[in-house]
Length: 405
Image 1: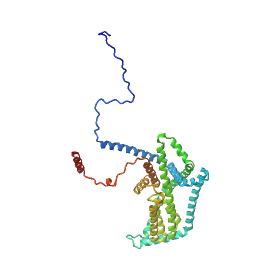
Image 2: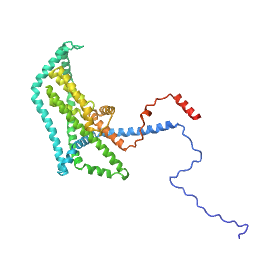
Image 3: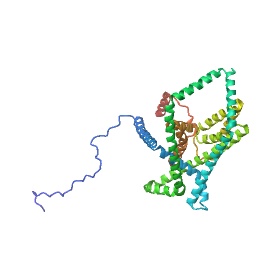
Image 4: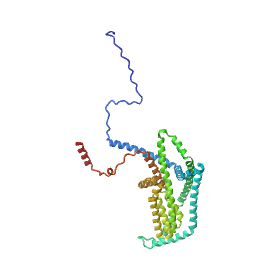
């Protein structure tokens, strides 16, 4: 027993330790947000969109600083997409590097033969063409002076315009020389980009899979599968679009060449090449080639020949859009025409002809990657989409009735 005056010592309890990073419990009650929920949600979405726009702007700015490099890599990917099926076939009987060299050499021979044929055709038809152009221009001048149009243009006015043009050339001769020098520098850049593109194509065709595997292995293991899926979807769309565009362009060029030869339009081969090149520029390429062909037919063979050429090339364009596009590309590239128009317009305003060429495949690849990685919610039915919108007071009245019942 202990004495009455003796107290028992309380056991020692160590104080609780503070853990780094632990949150303190607020002493007072939590404060509600002053802003409504819809405003806070809208603000959250807004700053995320601002960050995305800034990121896209930085990508465009960085691309503009190395535009030559971007063009070279893009052309290398285009050449790879076009030649890869041939390399796959040749690699079954030849080593990979030899199959790559044979495929690239075949591409060189094709384009060299095409340019040679165009040059020979222009040289052979030049004398007859000059006479036809002279006669055609005389017919056009006579038609403008005949008064059959709401306005009349005389030969004196035409001569005055030609004199003004000559005077303008003489006044701006220095500027034209400077632009010619700048164009010469652009030609050097074009050949540099082509050389770099061919260099990249060799390694993309010969060691492309090994290069992609090395890149994926540099990423964390948790994200490799997503990158592999996204890269596969993007390459499937890009290669399908590129090969399909080449097939369609060749078909359009051949049809235009046969059509112009039947009509007897001079320079059928160069005009067919213009149609071939125009197929690579969506929306604006084919009409531009058609206008040039109509001008040549007008100057050489008269008004009705130009009308026939315009109608025929327009029909070739309709055949391309309604038959060749679905047949060749299928479901590899499924972009709405409105999106194509917006992409081409944006690309043209941003980077000129280059932007018009690369905008559609870039948008197609971005949409393919997004569609492959996203999680799709259950779609809405047509009835839900077409529901009639009611006024606010009717909606509030219905909600009050539902609350009272």
